[in-house]
Length: 360
Image 1 (cartoon, rainbow, N blue to C red):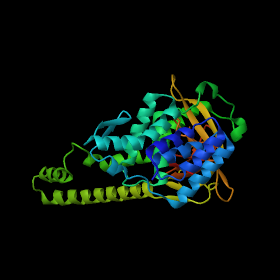
Image 2: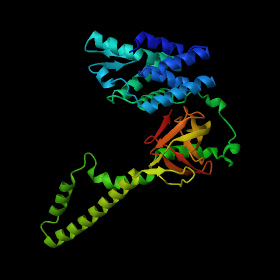
Image 3: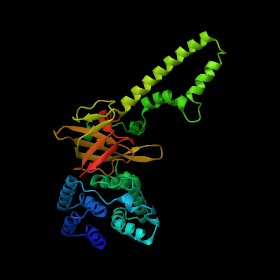
Image 4: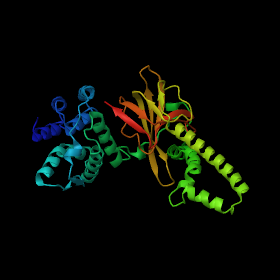
């Protein structure tokens, strides 16, 4: 196994100004089963030099085929508390040194990424807290945790909203109704059908309310032993709870039913729980919209292509798509389809309950 100091040097070389040095670093890092090495290659996959980026993507693709498991993070952090980008408590000095050695190259990558020590520490906390949930995370899980930790710290990415005001007519072929974007972005996070109907189902069982048995018992006791009225009330209760049970079943079935989308061009307004195969990003635009009177936010319009060459559109709001670039391969989980009034397009979108997974 390569010494930790050697891994640190290779990570440092992955940020060298000379692209040939970065390529050599990528090749050597690709031979190491280490989270820090993996993240350094992930950064090189989007290098400004096309040859470096292509090589790094090739290395990541090979690693993905092998599906190597990363370090046992749960075991590594046993008896260790981690906060502020460093170990704050450990069972002994040896355990503390071991954790710090493993995480040092990862921290260097975050520092280089953000150019800000506070953000780097917060990103480390997010990254570590995600990974210690897995006994041995795979290559893809480490990469996903890395992307999510960057997103959580830098919600507006590297985008300058002041320079993002564009004319969109050429992009979608329709006049963009900018005043509608904020409202529709907010609607994406809401699920009005489920919000209303679920409230009907659970309101009697909500926290602090009496049990259903106690409620029924009190209702029967209020009839003071009148058998005729009690039987009539019983039938009403049976009918009521049968309808509630059926409603709960329909909502749950509809909400969690997964739609496997095989034709990205064949989406309809209202489709939910959509999971896709790998889709290629063929065009991406990061744009600004007025979220509130005082606050602007970023939304991303992505054109995706499936393996048959069919295209579809994905909208991501609140800066959620800031890391997406042309050429990436994406997979969607728990997405939904919506006809957006502001662009007059039926497109895919992903709220906080769904996921956009970047595949390398």
